[in-house]
Image (cartoon, rainbow, N blue to C red):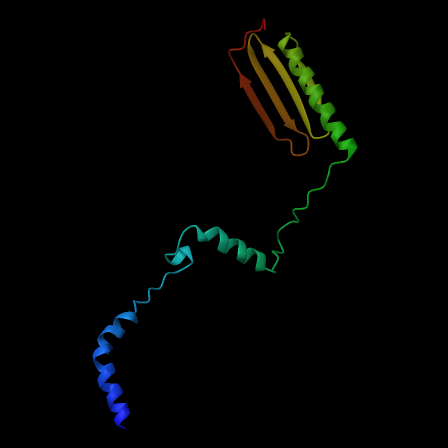
Amino acid sequence: MKSARLAGLILAPLLPFASGLASATELIYEPVNPNFGGNPLNGTYLLNNAQAQDKHKDPDQEDLVYEQPSALDRFTDSLETRLLNQLLTDVGNGNSGELVTDDFVVQIVDNDGVLTVLITDRNTGDKSEIIVSGLNPTN
């Protein structure tokens, strides 16, 4: 008992110095989600994590699978582009013209520098008219 009392007397003056070594600070809550005050740079990370874990599929959403067009489709598109280009070249030379495809009808008329392009959708019957004025008919 005498040794415990002696140790208490020796250690008692050292307690104020020891308490300085074991200091504590306040705990501060910092949210992660930017909706609740967190860092805005966390938004993309959190969204990507949520989407990666999402196993539910929207029944109304179509599959976004890209299908490579066939060689015939590519050739048809290329040919239509070439014919439309030729039609515009002919209009530049003062000629009028028309291009008819499965999807649309394009009529191009040049009246003294006023270029009129009439596009008709063959499926719906919708028509679009584009008028460009100020063209020089000699070019």
